Length: 432
Image (cartoon, rainbow, N blue to C red; front, side, top):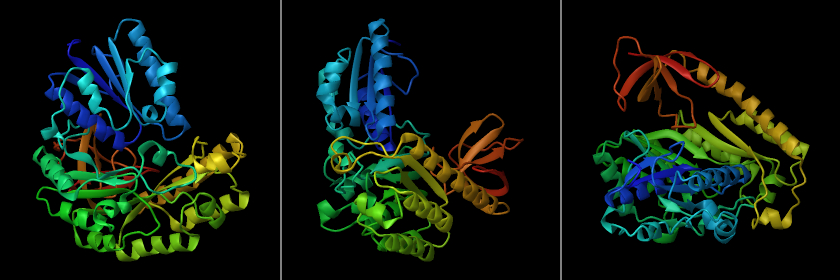
């Protein structure tokens, strides 16, 4: 199996995962056996798809490259290639620092990898992918890049300007994935709400989601990574009217104090943020909101942080993640602000935020006890079937645990489940 086997290792976000899946399909067409996220090299060639978003992600990517470089030195690997965001950003530096890597590719030129292996890129397969997720759900990337210029973010430096995919191409990919058994689509982009502005001269996300919802076989559509400024309000109508568009929105808000929003260059105010959350809940009853917040950005005072805590308590987000500021070279913040807040203060603020949210999450989970919810089954793990409701995205959100018992449930099928218990994060249910 060693020969003609390629190991793909994906680090970072689901947008990277989609790139890996496209590459895997091309490699399989070229006659390779491809593994994904193997713990140690199984094949003669390894390809590491890196992340370069924040310090921790960069460190993880470097460590993975070094681990595989050592395997190559020990003779367990013949060729090592690196692609993705970290590689895009530090191509020349990495080539000097880690010479064991045969070649570094950026985020968008991985097609060259096929040529370097002496294989052709099959254009006719450009929408096809080898799914690494369970076959009933997939990530659907609708654009690349970002035109926002948030102070802390290196993504525009890495990926360039926002580039929307043509709507018909996206719809073709949806139909293709449905034919392969996909029922649930996590729609992703660096910034969803900007979709279509470059191609069609206006925000086209509502129309795109409406058209995806019309494809037979699409049972759930979930939206990830929206931006609060200039939100396309017609999306509320689509979410309300279309039963297969989940009442779920992942919208990164980062902060709430006006001084911090200004320093972060978010182009939105505290008042506008509160109003948008109010509109979501009024226009789409029952919607679950996921957000991401940042602590420790240069200039964040104790007063700013207190406002952020109060915001969490008031807004009561259904899902929330948070991270500490890390200075990224080339960003506005790195050039104009001093990273003066000690790491231990950043970490203490992060811990405090997550502690508040944990209490809110526990209360919201407990409120679901007694409800009957539609649940998709992802896997069988020990004595439990593990599933999710429309309010839960894979990997990041709570799950529903259903005791196996005598009833056999089918992976990828939907069931009506009564919620009978809850803990801080997950729900427990029984099939009705």
